[in-house]
Image 1 (cartoon, rainbow, N blue to C red):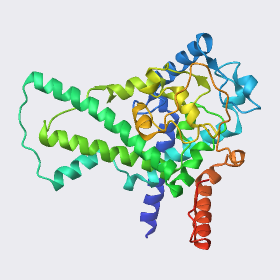
Image 2: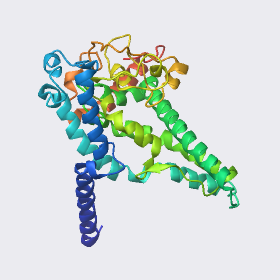
Image 3: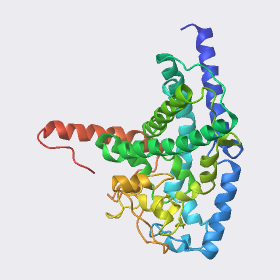
Image 4: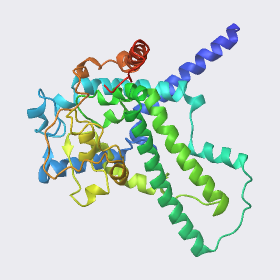
Length: 344
């Protein structure tokens, strides 16, 4: 590599790092971010109302933070806990690593659709009657939401049920406290799987609609985001919080509330592996992993529950421990070929 090429590569790398770090810092201004300012505002408002009038606060906090966590949403013991600070650091590191280092292998829904259209003969464009076009667009928007949610559930189940993938998903479950940024506490392999599988599902659905329904069909969106995903995003940040919000016995069998996902992070045996869905609870019901939360907040420990939770909270360990644990698992299997690796 010549000096000129090396300098160009260096400046390009620096530009990408600065660009993606700045974009992460300005997430409240990004419409495609989970931390877009309307979602943050709704999180604060709903949390305030829940703490004032609902079952409220204090679920799942560690012993050192339990009493303080009941004081309010901005408890310092939660937001400045060592686990939370690890979340903040990993958020910025992932914003750079996932965006820059993994860009060439990223799979998007639109890319899957284009690939399928290239493999199979493209549909001939045709005009649809106005009434039919509206019904088709409504159906497409609803099915896209359902298929996308199912794709995320499938990916999440793989992370829990496939032993070697679980080693990477431990990064997320090693959190000892929950803040909205805990949603980004994930290993890049975890992030990739959670993006790729829904993209395959929604890309195939879009191709099917383009081929057999209407090549020009579009989703209903609001501010550039799927309208239903936008609506659910108004409350989704509270899934990673200590604010207990349950939808009631009836809705809890159909929709995933923040309380569902807080239970998913529980280290208690009766909660482990439960409530893997994101918006719809029906997938957990079918798969047998649904644990319906009650209106009254439950007390439980958050984390892996194997005694290692407090040891994960550096970026180096969050990135490289999964590889070490996977290597250890494989070595144990080689030493004991007659035994399965089991489940940690």
